[in-house]
Image (cartoon, rainbow, N blue to C red; front, side, top):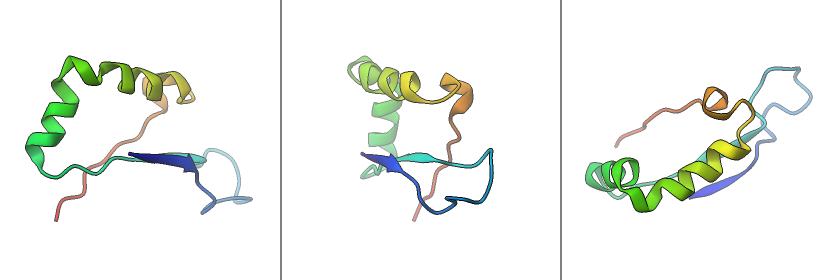
Amino acid sequence: MMGGKCDLHEGKGDNIVTHAFSIDFINRDALNAFLNDPVTHPAKAVILDIAEGGYDGIWGFNLEK
């Protein structure tokens, strides 16, 4: 998991991505474990707490090889 400030759009206006998290999983089973295993809930809660707008401030997508 990596996260930080996104400088790609700096100075381009409002309503743009300012920070990003990237989580890479070995396979779909690892993704499902992260999504469903209660041990990962604290990590997800931290991300939601710092996201502007909480859950509504998160935009997600999956990229598969």
